[in-house]
Image (cartoon, rainbow, N blue to C red):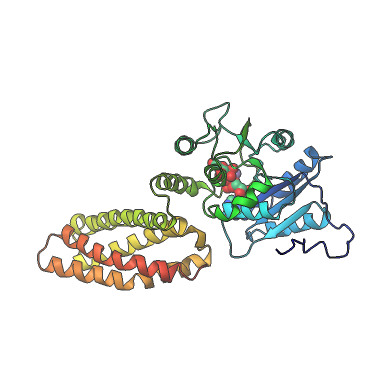
Length: 378
Ligand code: GDD
Ligand code: MN
């Protein structure tokens, strides 16, 4: 049997250049939080005085230069480190990367915008020794978040209730973005965590139903500077939750999302046709071209934001992606156009002609988009 030698132990001992006995790594994910970052860091340093902790900022190469601010901090304080991620996006994967870089026995996530109660971190650290996971809960003492409009409240409630139904444990806020966990657990399950979306806590709870969990209430405050990055994501996240309940497999999941977007596209397509052709009385092929392109832009936007969000395009890339999407769908759309037009000329009612055209065209399009449009952005 091979003897197990720690490959690092053969190195001569080096001067300690990094703290080794850290209790806690606080992960702050950031996207355009330039103004908030100094405020949250200052407050953390105040309340964590005397504790053995570090701060890991994970920035997705924010256009406002958040990573530069973060780097300045990391030069000044040796307990602050930064990951500037290039070409990688998404809150869950940012948090996971921060967790893995962290060296504390425990890791915590804290938003940069001061919506989470930073004064609770010390309490969490005191409590976490008796369990595996401590969650900052928005819903322990109250039903909704003060200041949220009614649709966001309702959506968040609905998502929370669905999530609770899927979990074995009774957790008041399984979608919380504020929690602390033993790092060893993350190291074990990191490869299985969903890189997409932002419900990383829910994912952890699903993977490890055996964890000993404690919840602490706090009041979710208003954002200090800037705007939320997750407004549209809340809806998609809720849809993901519904789908993940029905279908556990990953490929199907993507396919079903694509299907759901496609279905919305069909409705948009037919509605546009109805407006232009039936109500306004324009020529059928002209209406059809407009209807196809309207549905295309809508489908592209939703697919980019949701179906293929791990590879989503931003900024200038978004337009290039739209162009690619149009290219990839060109043959399908041509089929759609020719079939619809031909059938209408043959006096088939417009609705049936259009539906048949859509059916042939979209079957082609799924495959070409999966492999062509989003295939390269990995
Ligand atoms: N690195 C990185 N990449 N950071 C991100 C990304 C991303 O793609 N998206 C958002 N962030 C950062 C933000 O800069 C902020 O510090 C934090 O993650 C939370 O983002 P917000 O945009 O402020 O989210 P929110 O306040 O709307 O959502 C809150 O509630 C959710 C549950 O309803 C957050 O607490 C979420 O974590 C939580 O899941
Ligand atoms: Mn926020």
